[in-house]
Length: 315
Image (cartoon, rainbow, N blue to C red; front, side, top):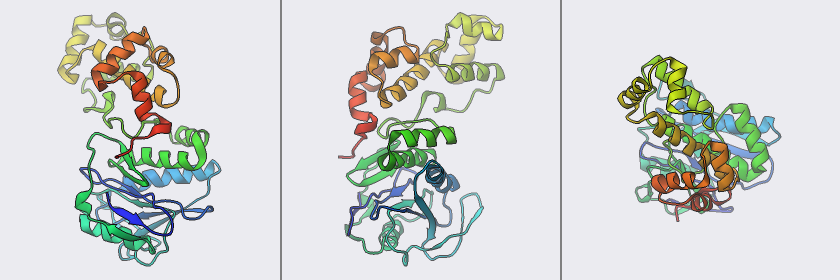
């Protein structure tokens, strides 16, 4: 990861196989100044998503000041052509408390390193070779000391929520997530690919109804017969729909959705037995078997490694 140093330890980073986000650290208590670096081709959601998290946190009692910067101070065009006006140029701005490099597909890596240093003003690099960044392709976000890197797009929202939680604790962050109607909280080191999101939604409206039913209430009664009954089709027909469109069975799909819910419950502080019950598993042992199969670790080991209080370090 780039090694950034200065008068205060930076909370920074950015990168993914596509191009993720970068964040640096607080240097003064109030207000907490968040600078977002944008450029031509930036992904709009990588700007708006994290910025909206900080703005919503302000409505919940936080004190973030959000500014948009570009390398030259001129406005930029996002990847979908929408124009973005900025508050200044990265090179002349004072060091922010939190520095975000928004994601995009085409921005040169060496330019990112240069602009990150310029935008933070008094910060200097010892080894800012972007090519040395280590990519964790499955992770939502990864922490390496005071440096954070995230996957693109919605993963930036997860990272922003994690940073708000560091600043203001879980209660305010939970309020922010609830107001934004986002999933709280995918721990950073967990796979960014949730079972319901691994592929496109089912083409068949009837199957979409079942998928929505299961994801809305993972702990509900979702036997094959009951799911088929919702559509007035035979269990065999429903199984054929699942295999054709989702390459799985109804039972396996329900189990994976419950597995995702159990991971979230563990991250929120529930013990494994509680997580099993709340997620709809018949027993702790059935939950444990799924965790070992999917993650090669027990629920307790997953909680120690990925829990809110123990976010993944890049090491």
